[in-house]
Image 1 (cartoon, one colour):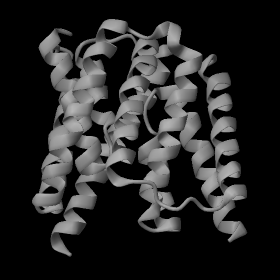
Image 2: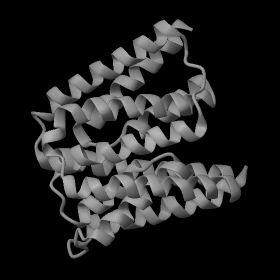
Image 3: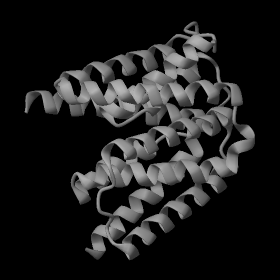
Image 4: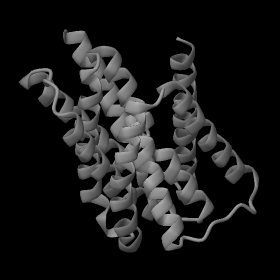
Amino acid sequence: MTLVVVAMMAVVFAAAAVQRVAGVGFALIAAPVLVLLRGPDGIVLANLLGAAVCAVVLMSVWRDVDGRRALLLAPAGLLGVLPGVYLSTHLSPGPLQVTIGLIILIGLAGALVSRRLRLSPTTGTTLASGLGSGFMTASAGVGGPTLTFYAITTRWEQRSFAATVQISFLGQATLALALKGFAPLPGPLPTLALLAAMGAGTWTGRAVAGRVPAQGARTAAVVVALAGAAATTVKGLLTWVA
């Protein structure tokens, strides 16, 4: 049990650090390992820790939050969770995740390859991105790729992006917890240890973020988003053929 807790602490530390630097990545990195080590309860634990990470990160970057976009992205993300939950419980998860993953992969690849691919940060595109992120969170477990695609195509400045999306992720994780309920936590001491690892990872990410150029942080966000979309596609394929 001690080795399991140490392994969970390590992955939570790394995931929290990446989230602080890139603005995305906690769910992608932490959730698969927590599920592997804790079973189905790991999903809820990842949601709980993810919400905590977003809250801690937000406290240190709130000055960079784009209020207008936050007011559109956050509520839209909550609405997007609802159809995502419905479809994930009524449709075959394999084809659904493959379709979502491929769409995001193609979109991100297109945004990276073609400098001409550009969207205006209008109310419509911002709301659509928020809805897509919430839908992805509920149906595939990762909402970051959608918002990263939006950030690339609208030329959203990295510091503002990394700060603002924490509000959206915090709302989505909290709603997911409300819909799924709270699974039993791994005991008082392991839970405190995981929270300590989360805090240490966030602090480390903050120290590193000050030394990482904006382009480097954006590259990290894109890499994490691509990995999330690829993982969603592979997961869907494995579920489909199983």
